[in-house]
Length: 261
Image 1: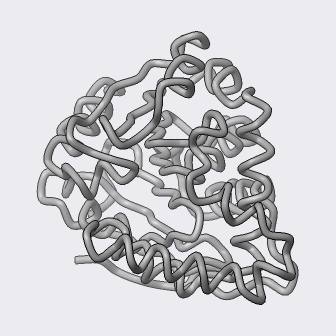
Image 2: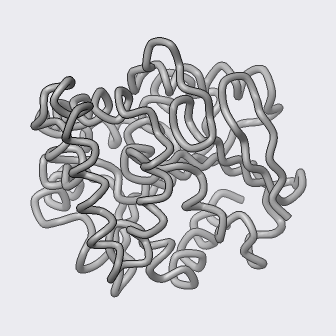
């Protein structure tokens, strides 16, 4: 059963029960919400773990801030909440933008993060399929016409893609100011091509998981390999491998969790 409650400035989905293993913190992507993780939160093979999946402030069912939080501020908000509310370090599962926020969280709050499972996190401009077109609008133009165009495109593509159908639902709820701000930040960080080297500098167990063939593309993979970041793939999957191939994803995630014992 998934329990929902408001914590600080966000809605938290929680399932499972406290266990000897580290709890799992899920961080969603750009325009997303923790709705995308609900199948994992109720998956029977993961029932022994405690799962914590917030809608980040400004996303999903969480309130919109008066001033939208930048990516580093989102990471800081998570770090403060973990310090105040969770008694032990967590395993972070970050998807897409959540991979970038997870990296920032691990860098800024190393005592709160035991390990990092990075799913399709941004590495280069190749990974800006959603953020790139959004950031191409200036803010006012995006608020006036860009958001509607973005939603219409995701809706059309979602007629043939179940993952995009869920994405459309979440994106309808998020703060459009935040969507544009985070898109600009993701494009700038991806263009800098330093995210792979920052991952390699982490002093915790980590794995970068990609969808194959429709997920992380060749140049980003070369940056990860060059930095020595451990990677694996889920076959016949795209940007949401946990939705495209849930059993293969859970198997890989359980192997990672088991390696931490």
